Structure formats: structure tokens, C-alpha cells
Amino acid sequence: MISEKLLQQIDFIKEIDKLKYILRKTKLLNSNRNENDAEHSWHLALMAVVLAEHSNEPVDLLKVIKMVLIHDIVEIDAGDTFIYDTQKNHSNTEEERLAANRIFGLLPPEQATALIAIWEEFEAGETAEARFAKAMDRLEPLLQNTSNNGGTWNEPGVNYQKVYNKKSVIKDGSETIWEYAEQLINEGVEKGILRK
Image (cartoon, rainbow, N blue to C red; front, top):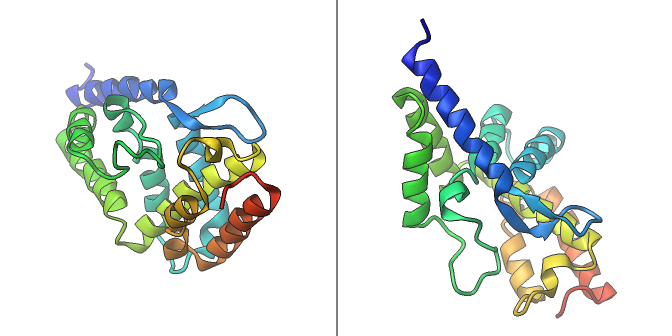
């Protein structure tokens, strides 16, 4: 007999397949195809594995991987908010909270509670793991934009200061990676792909 717990877990697994259909503004490295949220999350997980040694503080890598794999699941309901959007703030919204409760709520209660707690920890950005996970989340689109002649930096209203301000969160998770990221931002200005 198949347990109710397994059926709930399978329902969640089926639901999160929808993440593959949520398109982001950023395009894949050296490509004109938009990245989807599932690709983004996978890429961040591998980035965390490869770059963990550069974290400012020792981190629980499994927790970081969980954070980056689930941080955008709420976008199944809430949609992706462009980081430089001037109409909608790119922060935890009530819409995202409702999405987290609905989607993670498909799981058995103990798992739902655990994943919501990890999602909330990422959103708060106060632990070493959350700071490093956020650094990965801000680094990946930077790599994409520099490989695509500015990519989303060409959107109206996006300029050096906005990019610098949004990306400076990287230093909270890794000073080493921030030094590299800052160099990429400055090179973007020099190459004319980021307006000063």
C-alpha cells in the first residue's frame, strides 16, 4: 500500500516541475535564450559546490545547496521579479509568502516546515549560509550579462550605480568573489556595455 506521505511528496515533485516554465530576464551565458528558474537554481547549486571555499565564513554546504535550489520555487505562483524593476520591489512579498505556504504545504507537514524555514532563512540573509547563497544568486546573472554584451544592463533605467548597489551584496557572502565581481562591473563600464 502506498503511503499518504509518499503521495504528498510526489505531488510536490510534480508541482515544482512548473519552475522550468518560469523565464527570467537574463539570458544563458553567450546566448540569446532566456534562462528558466530551474536552470538558474541548478547553476547556483553547482556554483556553491565549486566556490564554497571562498565564503567569508565556513558554511553548511548542504544547507546552502538547499537554499539555492528552493529560493525561487515561490515564483511558480508569484512570478519572477526583475532585480532592477522599478515598479515591484525585489524583496519578500506577501505574494511570495502565500506561494511558499501553498507549494511547500503540498509536502508532509514536517518537510513543509523545514523547507519554509530554509526559504525564510535565505530571504532574511542573516546567516553565513544565506549570505553565501545570496552571493551566488547575484553572481550568476553578472556572469551572464558580461557574456551577453550587457544583457539586462541594456534595459531602461539600469546603470552602473544600480548594478553596483544590487551586486554589492556579494561581499557579505564572499569578499574574494566580490573583488572579482566588482572588476567585472568596472570592465562593463570600460567596454561600454554598462552605462555610468
